[in-house]
Image (cartoon, rainbow, N blue to C red):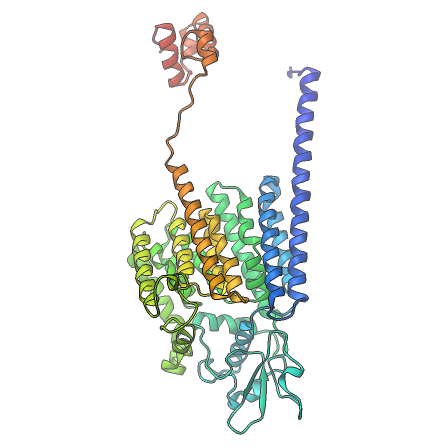
Length: 529
């Protein structure tokens, strides 16, 4: 006969369930409102501000504030529906991000041009975009010859206009591609990605092709993180720190930066290696480095498990990716890389690189000191990577390098964010907004101040985190009230169990836990079988 509960118990349970449902509905409503507000901020930023200036910066900083509120609110969402809500929010933010051409960078114009050139059967390392040999491939949304008496700025490109010439005897040429007189700087896997994206669309399809590809790749990272969190037994809401991140919407989707492909491959390499698959991890890591050289920063934190297999697989993948281009272009596959390093100040000279070290060291000593500190950081990470949670070392290596080198390009931090989620080191999310300020008009003094504040904040949060981890765990004991009632440190409820079991016989005590039997023996003075 089924057990019947008193009406009061049923009413109490109903009230508790009703209160829980009301709480969940409120969390869903609040989080949804914040995501919609975030989508509105992103939409206004990408459609109504134009290229460059202070307005995109203001919109991006406001988006970060709304994002943090939405991510905190997502912790209260019902666990069953969190993955679907996260993916839906990511799709919404991506949809508004592709509503306009890139707002702060024209890098995807070079991606499209390299893909168009390869589609015509020409190596992207052979000619510069302004070379007259490629004049027949130029689409109007990337190149334009101004009318007589007009200039390039009379009808500017949405991502910015560069004025150049195509050959020594030609008229002015307007283009959306930055550095049109130099060869491409992108590695082999990035070039294969450019070809893959431009393979199906016609030459007249504009920036939207790479923006949609960036959206697909960002969703791929979201799914990877959700699977990782589920297998690790961690709350799924932690994936929102990537899925709803403004950096992803602005730089991976709207800006369509190839760095998001590097982030996908690097995260896959880290997860595969942690899962005991060094060969597959090496392949993914080699492809990541051949996409954008920045993922090479992860190498010291990836040598903790079968490093020989991993290194051989990564090196072989890197070389195989370059073979088709080496066969056609030879040493020209280096492209503009040496010139780019010189231009950005990585080879010495006055620049914003190593901005923090410039506070205490004169030029060019900050370069040598920075390289020495990077080497020390790499050695420390290599020696102290924890196999159980390698993400802690990986996020330290990437975040420390970004703070030390201060590249000034916010999309470089796309590699950082997945490892922030995996390691739960959310304090490192202070880095992308700082890089955004540096890129969109911060002065040298402001850049140095923001970098110093970020370093201090990350160090303080890390110190408190380590202190909490090292805090000794106190085992809960009986309360003073129970001790006074029973006259012993054994809780009263345990004494009741023991006395009842004594009356029923020792045979009924066999299934008592060992700890309970020990307390019972102490209390009653007899041993239980």
